[in-house]
Amino acid sequence: MRSACGKGGHLGLHRIYRVRRLLAPLRDELFQGLRPLRLLRYQHTAERIVKACATWFVGFLGFSLMFKFQPAISRIFVVISAVTVTIGLLAWRYAFHRFLQHSKVAANLRQRVLFVGWNDESQKLQDSFEADAVRPYEVSGCVTLPGSQFHLKPSVPVLGDTRTWPRSSRST
Picture 1: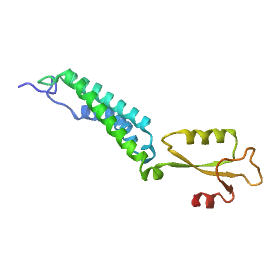
Picture 2: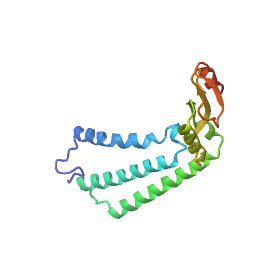
Picture 3: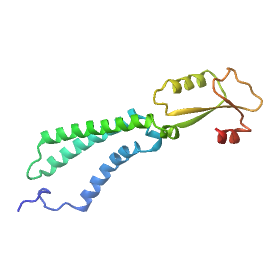
Picture 4: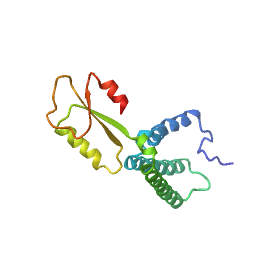
């Protein structure tokens, strides 16, 4: 009787452990996209999905060729399944992303930004936040250091100075 595991017929625990160690970064890479702060970033999540599916494709094909499964798995089937799974996951994620963007939940997923001081760079960053269609960041306002003045008039609410900052940040 021929074994599906190769010559020895015994797939040792050390081999399973090695495979688990090889797959751990893939697992971590894939599940990083499920964090609430990343739900509004489709581009970031799409890259992770493509990486995970490509890794699955290469890993599965390599694993099946290395252990010479009987009956042999069609390489065309593996390619078709990898492509359809990738397209399906990206389409589902895009639909989910569009739903989240237009729901009330999106406001709770946005990260709030509080500027300390205000200058040209602060204004450019705030403008880039406003220009982003997804808007993963929401500018709460800015605070100043005690006794200092703004060099440029802020286009966001001024919430006081750093002495009152803890109270200001809770009220926004």
